[in-house]
Length: 570
Image (cartoon, rainbow, N blue to C red; front, side, top):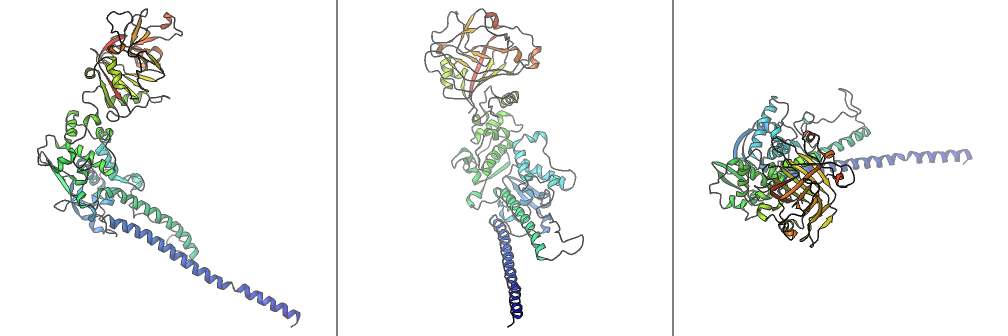
């Protein structure tokens, strides 16, 4: 073969080898088909997961028919019977309530003896909500909103927020921005689609759109799972014993719970026995009181949380305190533990005020939001005794503390938060680096001044034998004074003239009834400045500085108290 022919042959063989790429294209095509099939299988697995979850909850696993929206449902709401059209219940699209009544989960509901749907929901809140949704679906209101009074009524607020929420968005489902249902969103047209034209069918274009669609599919799956998780506690548990309904009659009103709720405080608890053993007995309480107490227990069981003081106080609504306490005790909830003692000086409103007065302070004390556990009274002078020994024996080992005292005759109230323990370890008095904050909680009709009155970073504590000495008697600055607790913000307890005849020999026997209260002139709240009072400048006795002190009680520098209580705050 000539050299030119050999070159041509070589070139030809190289060209044919290059053309061999056709075989590789076939391999890539097969791999692409295989990959697309795997994508399809993964999406089918996602879909089957949703269906399986629905089936496990008693759902149908398929789409509900539009015809079912015309259904009128018979519902037993914790003992109260009502009828509601399904379309009204589903008016807030995407909400927990709408998902629950969409028609897919009818078989998942607990049923009563008459085959009514049973809901462990506080009846007044559910009936109010259904009424509002009827107005909403008829476009008579723009959205469903709680009144200001009901915003602070825990059962109304809890059930309205839960049933109207869309767990996938963490927003109210009846907000205009979340009005679309879970199947109402339309995917955007992909790049090849223009107006009413036909989409391009190129595989590469479709694959680009597929990535976006898969992301939306996964997001939709997560949203649907969140909605189903939210309704699950309101459906059957799968345990026939737990799902059995038990009832009591309260003045002709039936109140119904599941056995699981009845036993949630203990199989032999007072609450359980009211439903399981003593359900035929007459209940000496109004139905609304009992419904509110039962709902506290039902919500705690549904959420798997322990009952707190905030739960119990928030559920009171506008009920009279004594009647509410009676209902709590009747159903086995410790009223003192959750509401504080009925004869206590300290109230939740007082704590709110102190928190408000401390807002913006860099080193503000930690003040709990309500009375009741963990805010527990551990000392009451008129019961436990007025001696210094009675007091320090009751409060030892507890910290932080809140002392509250009532001034005799004027009924003014003073509070003292002490951030460390009050410890008496021997006969001698001691000095502690313990911070304390003082407040006036109640004034008089003519002098209604309240607010923070000062703080201190140190404290003097009497021992069993020795008192705190060399204190200024502001009522007679030339005289010395003793006390058993001093330097605690702006209040001294158990004060008396150093030379007074008749004082107990031991500090432990000193009576804590007489107090001295004062504040710095420059530290008083603005509205207090119109209160004309005598003042004392300790510099007149040789103290450094020009600080001026003023009394904080209408009784003057010193006053008698007719009650003193101590509460542990943690």
